[in-house]
Amino acid sequence: MSQGVGGASKAFRQYEGGVKLGIGSFNLCKEKRDPQLISLQMLSLLPARILRLLEFIGFSGNREFGLSQLREGAAGHSLRSVLCVLTLLFYHTYVCLILGTGEGNLMEAEALLEPYIERYPRGSIILFYSARIALLRGNFEKAQVKFQECISAQQQWRQVHHLCYWELMWCHSFMQQWMEAYRYAQLLCTESRWSKAIYVYQKAAILSMMSEEEVKDTGENIQELFRQVECLKQRLAGKSIPTEKFAVRKSRRYCSDAPVKLVIPALKWRSVSESVGGSGALLCVSEPSEYHPDDQCLVQMLKGLCLKHLGRLMQAELCFTQVLSSERLIRYDHYLVPFSLYELGLLYKQRGDFTRATRCIQDAKLNYKDYSMESRLHFRIHAALNSLKSSPTNSP
Image 1 (cartoon, rainbow, N blue to C red):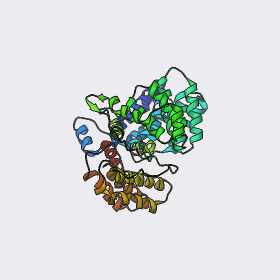
Image 2 (image 1 turned 180 degrees about the vertical axis):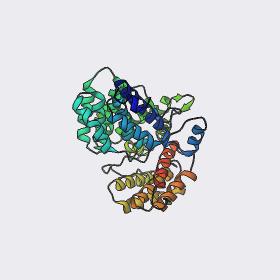
Image 3 (image 1 turned 120 degrees about the vertical axis):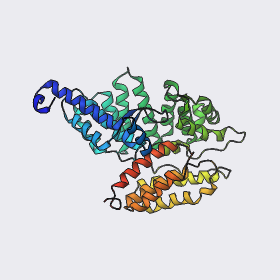
Image 4 (image 1 turned 30 degrees about the horizontal axis):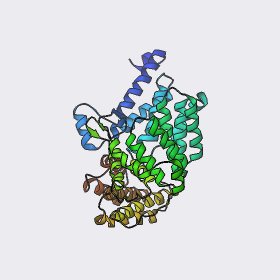
C-alpha cells in the first residue's frame, strides 16, 4: 500500500503507526538472550562481533534509523503512538545509561512526555517516567514526590511499586537519608522476588552507612545479612546474574571470623551498574588490611566520578590515573582498572582529546578480562567507541 493511495484513510494511519513502531523497535531492540542484561537489549548497542553474527542469521540494527522511525510514530495519531513514546522514554532514561555512555536525551524525553502529562496526569507510567527524569536531572525531592504519586495512582501492578521502591531507595541514598533508604530496601526484600541477593546486599550496604545507634534501632545484624547473600544467589538458564555475583564477591569479606568492612558499599554497586555521579558521599578508607589497596582505589575511582560530573576534570583525571598506577597492588577488585580506563577515556572525549580517549577505551576493551561486570562494561565501551568514530580525528 502506498501513502498516495491510503494516506487519507484512518486504517492506513493505524497501519503506518504499527509499521513505524515495529521497524523502529526492531532496529533498537531484541528480546533478551542473556540473563545478565536487562529485559530488552538494544541491537544498535551490541558489540561488533555479536552484530556480525546476528546479521549473518538475518538480524540487523540501525540505531539512528530506529530512533527516526519511533519519533515519526510518536508524532503520529495512531493507537501505537503512545507505545513509540514509551519505547523512546525507556531508551533515553534507562538503556543509554546502563548499556551506553550515559548520554540519554532528557530534553527529548521531557518533550515526549509533556502532552501525556496534560492528558493523563494520574497515569502511573507517566508519573513514573516524570519521576525518573527528575532523578536523572538531580532533582531528588521532585523525584520522590512523583514516585510516591505513582505508587498511590494504582494498586493492581505491584511490580510498578517495586520499581518505585528501587528508585526511591537510591533517591534517599544520594541524599544520605539512610533510614529512609533502608525502609525501601526492606520493602523490596519482603515484597519483590526479582533478586533477593541484591536486595539483601543493598539493605546491608545501606545499614553500613548508618551509625551504630541507628542500626541497633532497626534490629538488624549487618554481618548476618551479608552472609545471607551467597545463599540467595540464583541461576537463570544455567547462568548466574553478574550483579548478584558482584554482590556475593563483596559480601565474602563478612564470612570470616574477622570480617573486614566494605568501604561506602551503598554507592559502589551503582557506580559500576549505571552512569551516576554524586558528590555527597563520605569518602574514607577502612583500617589497613589485605583489602586496603583495593579500597583506596575504589575511593579514588568514585571520587573521580564525582569530580568528573562536577566538571573538575583535572582533579578527576588525577583520581583515575592513581587507580591505574596502583594496578599491581589490587588483589580482588580487578574491575577497578578497566572501569577507570573507560571513565578516563570519556573524560578525554569531554575535553576534545579524541585520540587519547580512543586509546584508553581500547585499552580497557583489549587488555582486561574475567572481571566483575565485564559484559556491562563492554556494552558501554562499544557505545563510546561508536560515538568517537564521528569525532574530527576519525572523520574522513
